[in-house]
Length: 276
Image 1: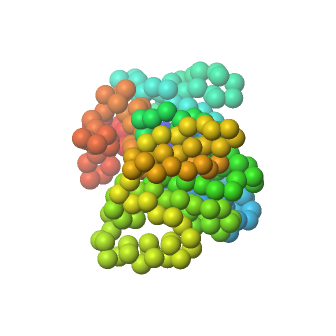
Image 2: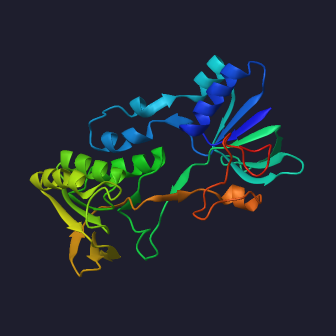
């Protein structure tokens, strides 16, 4: 019996691969959200109207996984703790609040990452968003129906895709990045043409600068940078990176690395031989 915590890409593909390798195994897939598998790389393009139908973002459904692969798929459930000695999980049904236990022979953690939230006030104001899930996507989609401008913080992949799609919708855009270039992991000469393209599409770049404050001002948001630059906008999108969502692993006493990632061997096995 294999229990997988987390769906989307890692957990759902692990479940399907396991079924092909282990025809008679009991495989349980637990997902906190209502959708078990969606194309997270497509989320900005749905917001921009390039992908017109929300259903196109859904890679597969719980019913299809149950019928085609014989998986026990449970959505909107949250694993609250791992009892390693007895090999049991404590699970909460987020719809009914029922709490129950589930046993496992092997456990796969596919909990992914959580967006980094800068330590500042204003992140919970209306109009301030982070894009990580289909629910985030739905909230931003509704907000953008009446939006005119946006400040995007972070010029990594998500930030650039958001700017591309917000401009596609006709919004005025400011892009803020702490590094002196967009796409910081790349060599500078590779990013210069991207910056030129952004400027040609009337994106105002603020490189080597950082977000200092977000404050409500009437029906707008006042965004202030460390340099002192500030604007009024109706939308702020934060894309400053992610951190490992390792709360379950830490609480269970599994070994983690210096940046919080769960430590594994070459077979993706954790410090507990029954957990991967």
